[in-house]
Image (cartoon, rainbow, N blue to C red; front, side, top):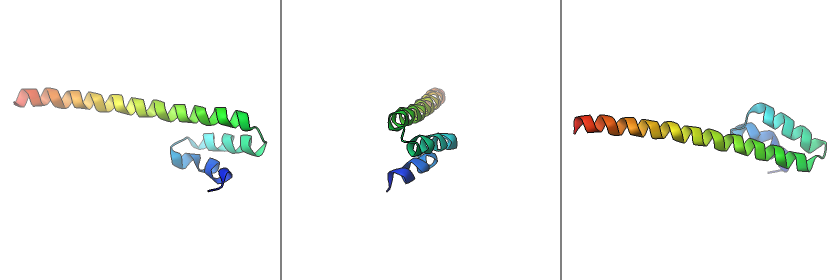
Length: 72
């Protein structure tokens, strides 16, 4: 897949639409180092979302264990 198309496809990778818009502008204006930093920012955002999702799953697991303790 061509690099430019991959950058345009950021929203399909879970990044907000505006990330793709900004990233493609950085790419088209030749600001590669800024683009790398920006893509890392997008990655960090996704990792933060993943961690938050894991915290919610952990809380559900705790709830399940507590209910199971009441049953058994």
